[in-house]
Length: 259
Image (cartoon, rainbow, N blue to C red; front, side):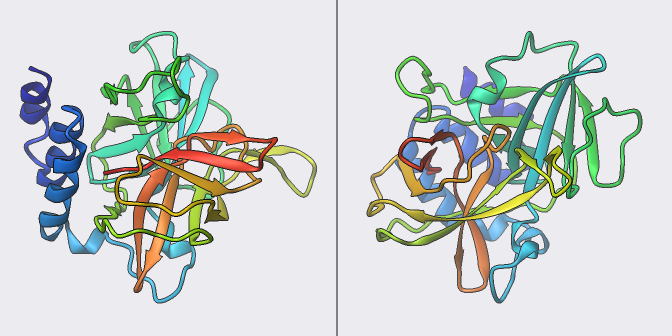
Protein backbone atom coordinates (compact mmCIF):
# COMPACT_ATOMS: atom_id res chain seq x y z
CA UNK A 1 0.00 0.00 0.00
CA UNK A 2 2.79 2.45 0.91
CA UNK A 3 4.66 1.77 -2.32
CA UNK A 4 1.46 2.29 -4.38
CA UNK A 5 0.74 5.59 -2.60
CA UNK A 6 4.28 6.82 -3.18
CA UNK A 7 4.15 5.73 -6.82
CA UNK A 8 1.01 7.79 -7.46
CA UNK A 9 2.47 11.00 -6.02
CA UNK A 10 5.94 10.76 -7.64
CA UNK A 11 5.19 9.80 -11.24
CA UNK A 12 6.83 12.98 -12.51
CA UNK A 13 10.28 11.90 -11.34
CA UNK A 14 11.35 8.46 -12.51
CA UNK A 15 14.68 8.42 -10.70
CA UNK A 16 13.32 9.31 -7.28
CA UNK A 17 10.31 7.06 -7.78
CA UNK A 18 12.71 4.15 -8.15
CA UNK A 19 14.62 5.19 -5.02
CA UNK A 20 11.54 5.59 -2.85
CA UNK A 21 9.49 2.62 -4.00
CA UNK A 22 12.36 0.19 -3.43
CA UNK A 23 13.96 1.67 -0.33
CA UNK A 24 10.71 2.17 1.53
CA UNK A 25 10.05 -1.51 0.83
CA UNK A 26 13.49 -2.15 2.41
CA UNK A 27 14.83 -3.73 -0.78
CA UNK A 28 18.13 -1.91 -0.67
CA UNK A 29 20.06 -4.22 -2.97
CA UNK A 30 17.46 -3.81 -5.71
CA UNK A 31 17.49 -0.03 -5.22
CA UNK A 32 21.22 0.08 -5.88
CA UNK A 33 20.79 -1.79 -9.17
CA UNK A 34 17.90 0.37 -10.30
CA UNK A 35 19.66 3.62 -9.46
CA UNK A 36 22.68 2.56 -11.44
CA UNK A 37 20.65 1.61 -14.51
CA UNK A 38 18.47 4.73 -14.56
CA UNK A 39 20.97 7.53 -14.04
CA UNK A 40 20.61 8.45 -17.68
CA UNK A 41 17.08 9.75 -16.96
CA UNK A 42 18.43 12.37 -14.56
CA UNK A 43 18.57 15.89 -16.07
CA UNK A 44 22.19 16.50 -17.02
CA UNK A 45 21.90 20.23 -16.32
CA UNK A 46 21.34 19.56 -12.62
CA UNK A 47 24.50 17.52 -12.07
CA UNK A 48 27.52 19.22 -10.53
CA UNK A 49 30.45 18.95 -12.94
CA UNK A 50 33.64 20.41 -11.55
CA UNK A 51 37.26 19.69 -12.49
CA UNK A 52 38.40 19.94 -8.86
CA UNK A 53 36.48 19.94 -5.54
CA UNK A 54 35.12 23.46 -5.07
CA UNK A 55 31.95 25.18 -3.82
CA UNK A 56 30.15 24.70 -7.12
CA UNK A 57 30.35 20.93 -6.60
CA UNK A 58 28.08 21.06 -3.57
CA UNK A 59 25.20 23.17 -4.95
CA UNK A 60 22.66 20.50 -4.01
CA UNK A 61 23.13 21.10 -0.25
CA UNK A 62 20.11 22.78 1.39
CA UNK A 63 19.58 24.47 4.76
CA UNK A 64 16.28 23.43 6.37
CA UNK A 65 14.47 25.45 9.05
CA UNK A 66 11.08 24.71 10.62
CA UNK A 67 8.99 27.43 12.30
CA UNK A 68 5.95 27.21 14.55
CA UNK A 69 4.47 30.66 14.04
CA UNK A 70 7.37 33.07 14.56
CA UNK A 71 9.44 30.58 16.60
CA UNK A 72 12.28 28.62 15.04
CA UNK A 73 12.02 25.04 16.33
CA UNK A 74 14.41 23.08 14.11
CA UNK A 75 17.47 23.65 11.93
CA UNK A 76 19.02 20.86 9.88
CA UNK A 77 20.71 20.30 6.55
CA UNK A 78 19.49 18.38 3.53
CA UNK A 79 20.30 17.64 -0.07
CA UNK A 80 18.22 17.85 -3.24
CA UNK A 81 18.06 14.58 -5.15
CA UNK A 82 15.55 15.83 -7.72
CA UNK A 83 13.61 18.99 -8.51
CA UNK A 84 10.90 17.75 -6.13
CA UNK A 85 12.63 15.85 -3.37
CA UNK A 86 15.04 16.64 -0.54
CA UNK A 87 16.71 14.11 1.75
CA UNK A 88 17.50 14.92 5.38
CA UNK A 89 18.07 13.04 8.64
CA UNK A 90 15.00 11.26 10.02
CA UNK A 91 15.82 12.41 13.55
CA UNK A 92 15.42 16.03 12.40
CA UNK A 93 11.68 15.36 12.13
CA UNK A 94 11.29 13.54 15.46
CA UNK A 95 11.04 16.60 17.70
CA UNK A 96 8.48 18.40 15.57
CA UNK A 97 5.25 18.94 17.56
CA UNK A 98 3.11 17.79 14.64
CA UNK A 99 3.04 17.44 10.88
CA UNK A 100 0.66 20.38 10.48
CA UNK A 101 0.68 24.06 11.28
CA UNK A 102 4.40 24.43 10.58
CA UNK A 103 6.32 26.55 8.09
CA UNK A 104 9.42 25.07 6.45
CA UNK A 105 12.12 27.12 4.78
CA UNK A 106 14.55 25.45 2.37
CA UNK A 107 17.49 27.65 1.46
CA UNK A 108 20.64 27.44 -0.60
CA UNK A 109 21.86 30.79 0.74
CA UNK A 110 25.30 31.09 2.28
CA UNK A 111 23.78 31.96 5.67
CA UNK A 112 20.37 31.17 7.12
CA UNK A 113 18.18 33.86 8.65
CA UNK A 114 16.88 33.14 12.14
CA UNK A 115 13.59 35.02 11.85
CA UNK A 116 10.44 33.51 10.43
CA UNK A 117 10.13 33.94 6.66
CA UNK A 118 8.06 36.94 5.61
CA UNK A 119 8.74 36.63 1.90
CA UNK A 120 10.60 34.04 -0.08
CA UNK A 121 14.03 35.08 -1.31
CA UNK A 122 15.30 33.88 -4.68
CA UNK A 123 17.46 31.28 -2.96
CA UNK A 124 14.65 30.13 -0.65
CA UNK A 125 11.57 27.97 -0.80
CA UNK A 126 8.90 28.48 1.88
CA UNK A 127 6.36 25.66 2.27
CA UNK A 128 3.59 25.01 4.77
CA UNK A 129 3.47 21.41 5.99
CA UNK A 130 5.30 19.62 3.16
CA UNK A 131 4.77 15.85 3.14
CA UNK A 132 7.69 13.78 4.37
CA UNK A 133 8.40 10.12 5.12
CA UNK A 134 11.03 8.56 7.36
CA UNK A 135 12.77 5.38 6.38
CA UNK A 136 10.57 2.59 7.77
CA UNK A 137 13.54 0.83 9.35
CA UNK A 138 14.72 3.89 11.26
CA UNK A 139 14.52 3.09 14.97
CA UNK A 140 16.26 5.58 17.30
CA UNK A 141 15.92 3.24 20.29
CA UNK A 142 18.15 0.76 18.45
CA UNK A 143 20.53 3.18 16.72
CA UNK A 144 20.73 6.92 16.19
CA UNK A 145 22.15 6.60 12.72
CA UNK A 146 21.08 3.37 11.03
CA UNK A 147 18.57 4.29 8.30
CA UNK A 148 18.49 7.83 9.70
CA UNK A 149 17.01 9.58 6.70
CA UNK A 150 13.73 10.99 5.51
CA UNK A 151 12.49 12.32 2.20
CA UNK A 152 10.59 15.60 1.92
CA UNK A 153 8.45 16.30 -1.12
CA UNK A 154 8.66 19.86 -2.41
CA UNK A 155 8.53 21.57 -5.80
CA UNK A 156 11.54 23.75 -6.53
CA UNK A 157 14.39 23.74 -9.00
CA UNK A 158 17.24 23.29 -6.55
CA UNK A 159 20.33 21.82 -8.23
CA UNK A 160 20.28 18.11 -7.48
CA UNK A 161 22.88 15.38 -7.14
CA UNK A 162 23.12 11.76 -8.19
CA UNK A 163 23.56 8.95 -5.67
CA UNK A 164 26.85 7.05 -5.84
CA UNK A 165 26.05 3.79 -7.66
CA UNK A 166 29.37 1.99 -7.60
CA UNK A 167 29.57 -1.02 -5.29
CA UNK A 168 33.34 -1.37 -5.21
CA UNK A 169 35.12 -0.95 -1.82
CA UNK A 170 36.53 2.38 -0.73
CA UNK A 171 39.61 2.35 1.45
CA UNK A 172 40.34 3.76 4.88
CA UNK A 173 41.52 7.36 4.60
CA UNK A 174 39.42 8.08 1.48
CA UNK A 175 38.64 11.80 1.33
CA UNK A 176 34.96 12.76 1.58
CA UNK A 177 33.27 16.15 1.58
CA UNK A 178 30.44 17.18 3.87
CA UNK A 179 28.25 20.30 3.87
CA UNK A 180 26.45 21.48 7.01
CA UNK A 181 24.34 24.48 8.03
CA UNK A 182 24.98 23.97 11.75
CA UNK A 183 25.44 26.83 14.22
CA UNK A 184 29.09 27.90 14.39
CA UNK A 185 30.83 30.83 16.03
CA UNK A 186 31.53 33.63 13.55
CA UNK A 187 34.52 35.96 13.55
CA UNK A 188 32.41 38.44 15.52
CA UNK A 189 31.80 35.82 18.22
CA UNK A 190 28.15 35.21 17.37
CA UNK A 191 26.49 31.93 16.40
CA UNK A 192 25.60 31.76 12.72
CA UNK A 193 24.01 29.03 10.65
CA UNK A 194 26.43 29.41 7.77
CA UNK A 195 27.00 26.87 5.01
CA UNK A 196 30.23 25.08 5.90
CA UNK A 197 32.36 22.69 3.88
CA UNK A 198 34.07 20.01 5.98
CA UNK A 199 36.64 17.59 4.64
CA UNK A 200 36.45 14.22 6.37
CA UNK A 201 38.06 10.82 5.91
CA UNK A 202 36.74 7.29 5.92
CA UNK A 203 37.63 5.60 9.19
CA UNK A 204 37.27 2.08 7.83
CA UNK A 205 37.25 0.19 4.56
CA UNK A 206 33.82 0.78 3.05
CA UNK A 207 32.44 -2.37 1.45
CA UNK A 208 29.47 -2.61 -0.88
CA UNK A 209 27.45 -4.34 1.85
CA UNK A 210 28.05 -1.65 4.51
CA UNK A 211 24.95 0.33 5.51
CA UNK A 212 26.86 2.84 7.64
CA UNK A 213 29.67 5.29 6.91
CA UNK A 214 32.11 6.07 9.71
CA UNK A 215 34.38 9.07 9.20
CA UNK A 216 37.06 10.93 11.09
CA UNK A 217 35.35 14.27 11.53
CA UNK A 218 35.75 16.50 14.58
CA UNK A 219 33.71 19.43 13.29
CA UNK A 220 30.10 18.33 13.66
CA UNK A 221 27.70 20.78 15.35
CA UNK A 222 23.92 20.93 15.89
CA UNK A 223 22.23 21.73 12.60
CA UNK A 224 24.62 19.68 10.47
CA UNK A 225 22.36 16.63 10.68
CA UNK A 226 21.09 15.49 7.31
CA UNK A 227 23.91 17.22 5.50
CA UNK A 228 25.19 15.50 2.35
CA UNK A 229 28.39 13.49 2.36
CA UNK A 230 29.85 13.65 -1.12
CA UNK A 231 32.49 11.66 -2.88
CA UNK A 232 34.25 13.48 -5.71
CA UNK A 233 35.12 11.29 -8.68
CA UNK A 234 36.38 12.23 -12.13
CA UNK A 235 35.02 15.74 -12.15
CA UNK A 236 31.67 15.03 -10.55
CA UNK A 237 30.24 15.15 -7.03
CA UNK A 238 28.22 12.09 -6.00
CA UNK A 239 26.06 11.65 -2.91
CA UNK A 240 27.34 8.84 -0.67
CA UNK A 241 25.37 9.36 2.57
CA UNK A 242 23.88 11.82 5.07
CA UNK A 243 25.49 13.15 8.23
CA UNK A 244 23.68 11.72 11.26
CA UNK A 245 25.53 11.49 14.57
CA UNK A 246 28.78 12.94 15.86
CA UNK A 247 30.73 11.28 18.68
CA UNK A 248 32.71 14.04 20.41
CA UNK A 249 34.77 11.58 22.45
CA UNK A 250 36.01 9.65 19.44
CA UNK A 251 36.04 12.52 16.96
CA UNK A 252 34.00 10.38 14.59
CA UNK A 253 30.83 10.94 12.59
CA UNK A 254 28.36 8.25 11.67
CA UNK A 255 26.03 8.33 8.70
CA UNK A 256 23.57 6.08 6.92
CA UNK A 257 24.87 5.12 3.52
CA UNK A 258 22.44 5.53 0.66
CA UNK A 259 21.84 2.49 -1.56
